[in-house]
Image (cartoon, rainbow, N blue to C red; front, side, top):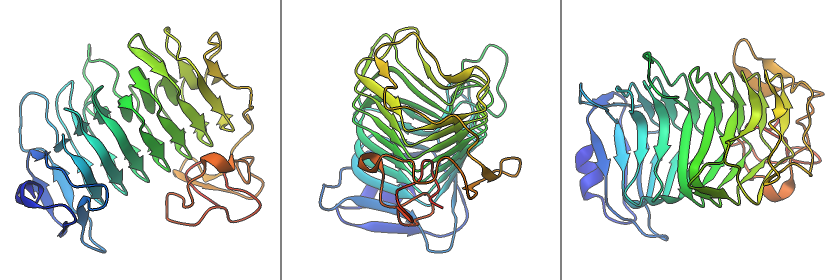
Amino acid sequence: MQKALSTLQPGQRALVRAGTYTQDLVFSRAGTASAPITVASYPGETPVLRAASTSGDTYPIRITGSYFRLQGFVLENAKGISSTNVYFDDGADHVELSKNEIRFSQDQGVFAEASTRDLQIRGNFIHDNGLGHVPGQHQSHGLYIQGANHLIANNVIAGQPFGFGIQIYPQNTGTIIVQNTVVASGYSGIVVGGGGGVSNIRIRNNIFAFNSQYGVARDSTCPTNSFADTNVLYGNGSGPVQGGCSGLNTAGGNRTSNPLFVSYAGLDLHLLAGSPAIDYASAAFSPNIDYEGRSRPQSLGADAGAFER
């Protein structure tokens, strides 16, 4: 794996066969806008990436390069109280992280630091991060995203017991969060804001359901010029949207009735007939496919959440 990450040229692609790859992978190269570098699973197979390090904070993969795609892997088991399964830093830009399963980190599922920009986190299953959480450890989230101009779309984010499903904090501008289904977070489905400056965030067409606190929460330092509307918000312990923040605009409205999952207990988050998410999404913020690659819309309009019915 590391040889591929170290030698691929713009426009080249490596397909990785099934197996467990235990390496501390680093991608630092640069593709181009017209010829990105791609590392993907071999069709019909699912390789697993784990870190080799056994002490300190570990990362199955660290990405510092640009114009790169990572698709179709299981990324798991990062260890350490500040670990993450996918680590974007040192100015990583124009990277696509798609169709992966990201699970069982002791801390974050995905972490992007403040110098990153134009990341696309699309169509991933991000779940059960915070595994092995220890007393005194900070919050552990599915996605902890700083930087600028990212797209977070069509992800299923479930079961982060010690944190938020998505944290947009403490510095971020221009990030769009659309068509995700976020459930069973130990805190809120998403939190936005922070002292480093958070602005121009769009939270639209998502389902935030059955999270312990709010569906959409704000930090004590509010974001500015940000919007959270056309979402379905239901069964969140503290309510749909945390108030007291004029910079987080909900004027477009949100629906607060049961999204009618096929089986929440079985984590089948497809929609049943009659769901308030059906045909509800804002067309301007709807990708043309869903989590499974199904085209949107299938009816009068696109559905909110990761799955199009």
